[in-house]
Length: 199
Image (cartoon, rainbow, N blue to C red; front, top):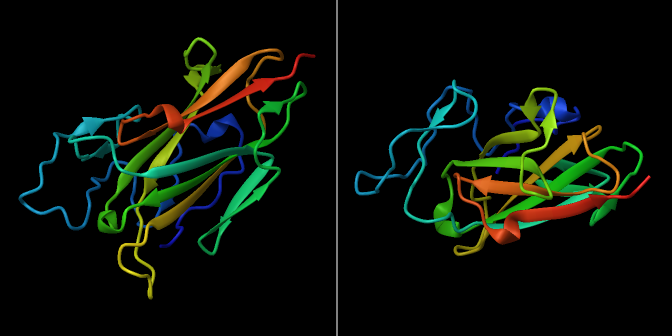
C-alpha cells in the first residue's frame, strides 16, 4: 500500500480536494478495480458533486469495509501508519481550534486493488450540511488497498487516512456529526458525533 497524497493541512478550503491512497488518479479520470472481470456487474457511470469527476462503482451492496473513526487534535499518515495526537475527542471549543479526522479502513483480502470512492460531510444536529461560505464542509477522495509483501493470505488490508482542518464553521453549544460514505453508501457506525462547548 502506498500513500500518494499529502495530509491536508488546510481549513474548510479542503472542499473539493481529493486524497489518493494506493493508486494515482486524477480528477476527471475513470476509476475501477484492476481485477473487475467481464462477469462482474458494474453500475452505470455516476457523477459526484464535482461535475468533472466521473467514476465507476459497484452497485450490488454496501462495500464490506471496516471503519474506525476518531476525532483528534491532529493526525498524520506516514510509512503506511496512522499517527494520532489527542484522539477520541467528543467535544471541542468553544474557541476555534484545529481538528482532525483519523480513519483506519480495513479492506478484505479479496478486495485488494479495487478503487473505492470516499467522502466526509459535516452535518448539523438536524442532518443538514454545514455551510462554509457558499459550499458545504466536505472532503472526498479515493482509496485502494494493496497487498504488502509477505502478508498472510486472508489478512485484512489496512488503509489509513488523516484529514486536518485549521478551523470549522461551528457554533458554540451545538452538536454535529461527520458522515462517511464509501461508494455512495453510508452506515450508522460510519458517523462521528461531537459537540461544541457553550461559550
